[in-house]
Length: 371
Image (cartoon, rainbow, N blue to C red; front, side):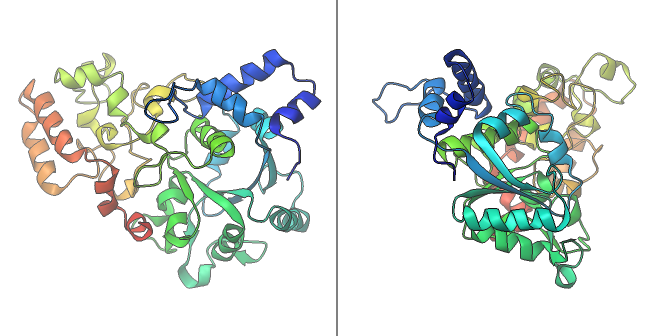
């Protein structure tokens, strides 16, 4: 690894003190840091000061990014991250040693570079995995350079300090794992048991969340995770908790169709299939495209894409929050159609179903195996 700390490298490139402090503030926000005491009686440490201390002691982290059964959506997304940008990450905190989509080299040259990086930084590099891993028929459904995804994952994971699974496919199996799962696709955590794993689910993952988690790990190590290995800083609340349509939900005002009066007036999309009440993610706060909007704000129900097995959780446009049990579905149906009672009934149902992620483990075979 580079011998200089991140701060030393920045100074060597002519970064001023003012620019350094500005970068520290950006990284503190990206990592989802809040003021926190070292112990119960200690004075809280300012998040920016924590980042400054880390930059002055940490070295840039080598990253190896593998893509398997995916659409490259998470790569496309992080290339549009705004705070920090991908350029900020690459120039200031990371050295991306291998990424088959972003690398200038291709073919055997890229593969040789990856092998050299894994050898040079053994035990120290961060492995980022995008896409699910098919194991059916010997893994023939996804190969890179003539080698199966399973083989490549096991090889890279063996020398990794930690693994970041970005996107629902890598985190929980995603669309490839959906019933009937013809390729026998698995998540990273279902196959790798001996390494720290951080899941950043979403389809695709929010770019600032991916960037923020990488920054957090480089500077401070593995962040606080929930039972599905998701960073609590970004997945500690549901979409519904922070949704701008929440007041209409509480008032029992629900859009009945996508072209009706309720939809035009911004009413709650619960009856049109919104999964926000049981979906943990930061979409409603971070949003997309530099904070411009997110699906619910633009008029489309949340699909629950950061949850396990979201593709099999029932119809996207059914009036339910997935995954719900059938009795709860019946109760939800009974609540619909009685005016303001819809809001009360739906809220009660969701409070009973909005268990914390530990209960969702029952809905996720891959997650249960990894526990």
